[in-house]
Length: 402
Ligand SMILES: [Zn+2]
Image (cartoon, rainbow, N blue to C red; front, top):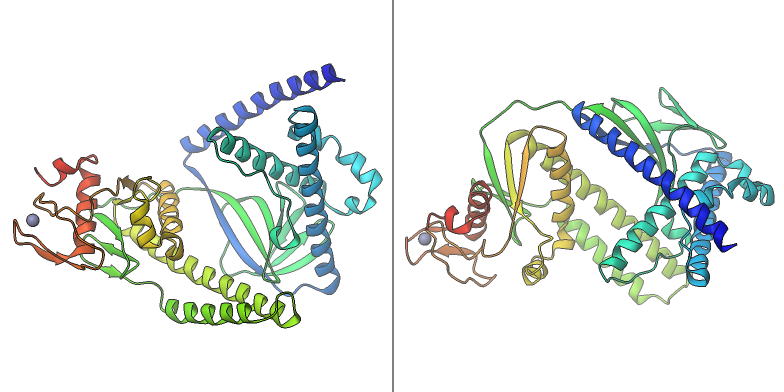
């Protein structure tokens, strides 16, 4: 039995390497051809009762399969120290369909994609283990499993009508034209609403060259300050949405846990969260597209660098979502001929343009240099220093001409 497993794994790993190699070659060819991936997300109009039931059922079966596959991998590892791979599990799919005929009502590639998700989850888990971080993959409750994917086929789009294999036809609110070759389709449920996300492959269109450069500083007062002094605040309804959220959260904490009224309040909080997420995404997309269009080189702080944790905490990174903003700039830059440079955030707020270093508490918003007499808003100064740092190859002494 043991020999059989080793042989089976050996074969599969050889197959894996070959697959990896093909993937790498495909990626290289795409880069050479300037081919990029884009996502288009559309709301699905209120589906009919039958389609709605089919969507729910598919999502539920996918979740059950996910949890079962996770259980199998856990058991195999805990009991026999064997790590199962994708092929070991995918080979069982036809048998699963024989035993549980409900699975015959789900497109086969959708089921395979669930097992590929497990594969990715475990890959991430083993990477975490290597780094010494714990955290075994978790079983998914209905509220934590919200999408399934057609990785190649099983769907077709004609006009705004989307035909889903084994589910039915739905109408999309097509807010823009899909450009490029459609590769995958993910059906997602968010706060009781359904969405279709298409990933497409398309040719990157280079932007006209410019000499303009910019440094970005993220701060407490404004969302981001540019090195030319422009300050950009959060979106228009940020404050009122935050107030709404706080009010709804207070309601949850006041009500008796798991009571009807409590459930209602929790639903409300989720709804506001989703709304804020949409607003934030919209705001960040518009701003990042604008910056990438305007500037050839963009320099920002690398928020992932350890050692600035105190700075990070005081800047409440996660609340405002700078990381996701920088991520958006990063992939938009990758899709064009622009450049993004990330610099170490150490001392960017303590150094003057003349090179003089002075400690400032966070509450001190204005920089008055004792050496050169420069008087400037601290965030604008930081943005200028960040830009200099990026353009000088990350050397602070060189940047400020010491
Ligand atoms: Zn100075």
